[in-house]
Image 1 (cartoon, rainbow, N blue to C red):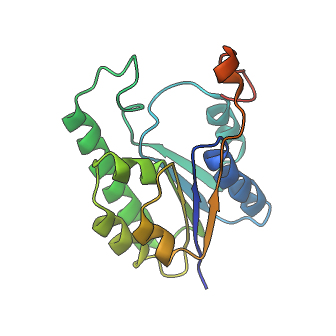
Image 2 (image 1 turned 90 degrees about the horizontal axis):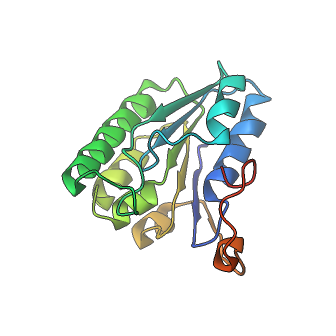
Length: 173
């Protein structure tokens, strides 16, 4: 039986929780694919770690970067096209049945931003067969929550950024 797992909320740790599943699964020689819907080519620690998890772990960076932040120079149409492409890649990976786990990183946020439609994501989830699906990102849609087997909400209580502390290497990226 395959599971649908959702990590959502305004707190840190959604992608990290999904990567925890991947780390555990690699120990059993499971095949994992992570498709990133929003994150682009920023360099962060996970990218170096992914190399160490090969060949069991595959990363597909499909996003064009975070939408609407200070250094976002992409149009909404470029972000929408990238998210739709990520959805197509996800469909191919799921239908291949070559993976035990597929992580759809920041897909919840892509839905919230209107880059992709929730109905298309639900259709994708319904095609999962024996593949476990992990969806990350803030603002998980109610319909996604309703079909999920496990939903965890990360809730921010305190964050160093609010005290002027910028992202910390090895902790935040």
